[in-house]
Every structure is written in structure tokens, then in C-alpha cells.
Image (cartoon, rainbow, N blue to C red):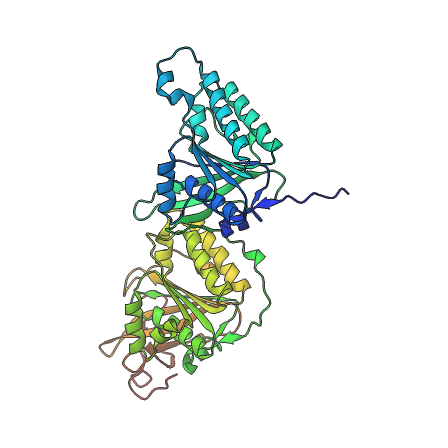
Length: 497
């Protein structure tokens, strides 16, 4: 069996993009970066040239669509400078004033002369890396597709003879047919920008082709920030298996642990389901605090409330979450659904697990997460992959799902219970002229749990979980009735965790 020759790669300056490209762009080849105006082509190209400059390789940026000053302004908006690589703006022959009124130069001659200018500049500079921005301007110089393809092919052969890595940008504003350049390119990267009905636009990219080299297929979200380009590779959970002991994580409340059959098992997902205000986030916070006290790192992703609100509630529960966050024992992040892409959220979770070894992750809430984009089926699949990844890493994951309604006929906005190993149901109930709270475990895949219902309260003495209440009826219907005596209820002679 013949040995395969390893392909030498050129790093792009964007580590996560290199991860998707399995090391970078193949050296000495011609690559196409295509996308509509505003998708980030120029920014990515500049990042590639800056990386080449830092590695001591000579770069050349040829622009046919904007002048050097405009390109400098783009670089400065990211805090970059163009020193260290050559930048030339080449005005196509057709755009020169003395040629606009002429009928002596057919379009093929004009295209050929422009390509000759590009070749002359490359020969003069002798770069290792070339960016041509954009090929759409070359299309404008001819109405003949065959002539256009012939000139691009000649440019390709010239560049390959010089072993030069080339990135060609295409804004798709002038196009004879779909994918007309793809067959001439070694690789094709497609950029896309999706405008949402509210909030920030979502950017994503995919590798459409790469001859003879491995890459990660599919769409990957990315963002352009003030300093750089951030790419968020789509998650493949099966690539992240690890060995761990499937022991249980305790909450610090003995009665709650008894209800859960000893605690929550590492490598499993628990869903807390109930109406708004019933105490789901407080129970999650109890597990986070217990983990921190054991010296473990915890991560809390909040879509719904600010840190100040969480801090005030934690103080009322006798928990100082602010100190744990300031000491970086808890990674707290406010996730804004109108600004956050699903890929970026998954990447944030991964950083807490892989970089800070988080042993418990809380996502509060699923309702807001599902509003990050309208394609609910794709988002549910992405959440399923994230949960599989967390389970493979031995993390205890707590999902919070708020049901529609407060009392009476409460309903789930979406059924994601199949993703969870444990489902905890919380309900309001009325007893003795007061609104009280009940908790029960309706599902646990990893062991035995109590089938009973317990009362719990949050204030004023911190979280308390009472003894089993045997005289409930109609809990699962959403309208629970307590028909027992008042003695077992919290506030009287009760057991607390």
C-alpha cells in the first residue's frame, strides 16, 4: 500500500478555524472564500495575512474593490495595522477614465490586462501568501464565461508554479452560475449571515470542499469582535469520551438527597420542571453551592435573570454566590438569547468543562435557550449533542424548564424530557389557606428514587425539605390537592434537610 504524502498546512490565525480545517489551509494551493457582502471575508483574509507576518512569511493583499485607505480603516477597526505585508489596489482597466469611452478594447482584452497586472505585482513582490479581493470585479470585465474561466485558470497555473498559497474572495454579487469557481479551487469556504427577526445577526461558515485533506463538515457559528474572529466549531460528542466514576453528587440537604435516591449521578442530566416561581433555580443553586463547598468548579448559565437577582436570592437562602463567583469557583455567565448564537453558547459550556474542569453545569432556562433561533428541531438536536458531550465528560447537568401557567392546568412549552436521565417535578399546592410547594421525582434512569411527594420551602430559614406527604391527589394533573393533616407540613413539627 502506497504511503500518503502529508499535506503541509498554513495556519489562518484563527485557532478554532484551524481546528475545523484540521490544521489550516493546504500550502501552495488556491482557496476560495465566498459569501455575501458583510459576512466577514475581508476580516478573515486580514487575519490570515497577520498570521503570516507573525511567522515571518511574506504576504500580499491585492484589492480590486477598495483602495488602500479603506482597507487600512477596516484593519484599524479591529486594532490591526497593515505594516509587514504589501497592499496594492489595482483598478481594473475598464474602470480607468481614459478607457470608459473607448470601443477599441473588448472585454476579454480588458480582463486579460487586469490579470496581467496581478501577475506582474506577484512577480515583483514574490510573496508566499496572496489574497485577491474580490474576484467579482474580474467578472465585471467580461460577459463571456469561457474567457473568464480561461483567465482564472491561467492565474491558477501561474500561482501553483510559484508554490504560493492564495486566498481568493468572492462576494457573489456577479455570478454566471452556481459554484462556477469551485472546480478550479483546492478548497472552498462558505460564509453566511442570517438576519433574525430581533437581535444580532447570526454568522456561520462551512467547508464546502477540500481536496485530499480531512476537515470537519457542517455549519459552524462564528463572530467578529473588536479584536479578532471567533469561530465556534460544531460539537461532536463522541470525540470527547473520558473515564470517570459514576458516583453521586449530594445537595447538602439530607431530605432532598433521600428523595433523589442518594443524589445526582455524575454523567447524567437532570431536568427541573415546574411553573415560574416554584423554586427550580433555587434547587439548582443548592447543588452548585454544595459542589463549591467540596472544592469542585461549577458553571451557571443564566438566560433569564441578572447576577444581582441571583445574588439577592442566594443571600436569602443563606448562600453567598457572589464570593464564589469572584473567587472563580463558580463560572457565572449571563446568556443573552438575542445576541448569542447556539454555537457560541456550546463553546462557552465547553470552555468551562475543558479549561476549568466544571463538575456541574446549570442551564437556566431551556425556554430562553430555545428562543435563540427559530429552527427548533435543529436546536433540539444541538442541545442533545451538548448533553451527550457533558455526560461523556462525567458532568452533572441540571436543566431548568419553566412550564406555562402558575397554577391549574400548567403545560410544557416543549417536551425534552427524553433528553434527561432524571426528571424532577415541582408544583404549587394549597393547604390551610396558604400556597405551598411540592417536589417529587418522576423519573431516574440510574437508580432507585423515592416515589413519594415532599413539601419544600425556600424562606425565611433557607431551603427546607419536609417528610413524605402521603395524602396528595392530582399532583401530575397540575392541580394537586392535599387531604392530609397539618402536622407533617413545614412550619410545624417537621424534619428539615
